[in-house]
Image (tube, rainbow, N blue to C red; front, side, top):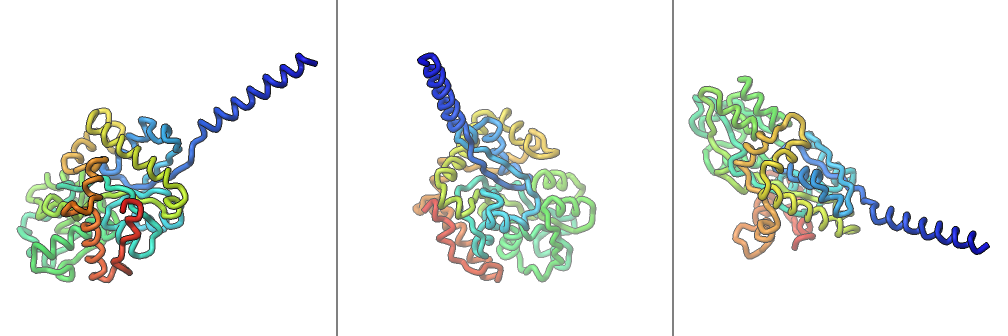
Length: 322
């Protein structure tokens, strides 16, 4: 009898140990989406290096190229986290998307540009010509900002073709289908190799127009702030790794995309500024002259004036960092 009791006790202890171990190893399922762009790719460093698992997260990263679906995905909670440009994020929130800002990821410092044929020397020369761009992307805000500040034209003076995809806009220019296009890397560098093609303006001229940020579904943020903090910490660790081990980092960053190489990532990075922990602290400081709140308010005011935002009241968007 005593032996039987001892065996039962041992079995019970073993079962408890297995249950405790399984509980400790259990991961929380989390989803994230973004399109093919180097600015978001440090998330693949976090995935490849196990940062998400260390934080207790089973992160499912989905590469979704159709940015027109983003507002619905983040609002319904089909995607928990979304990485895209700050300008579309502001527009989505202002038009009812259930999203909250988490952190700034990167800013384009020349990785995006308006490329034109040789006979178009200035922005004013675009009058009556055909220009391709993606109106759902930050390239549209960049284009209109450049137009208002660097020409006498309005959008109505130009035959603007909405391609619905920035890459396709670049390819349309390279095929000769349009006179000009707004594109990003690697199409930007490829287009500039065409005889006579040149950049009328790049994001280096308007560095606040194309910034990428991470947002989270508002219900998840309210119910599980610890998950938001964990994802942010994984991003910061990934940016640190990229800065300290670039060759390894570029390979990991490229691995999550189709037909993207480490060399492509390295080339893209030349025109990008990544925001880690220190950079986000500066951006989130109201004392900083051009903080994230001021930059974003300019975007909201701009689109409100254009009739594309239901409101320019965006304080709630920053509830997690204010």
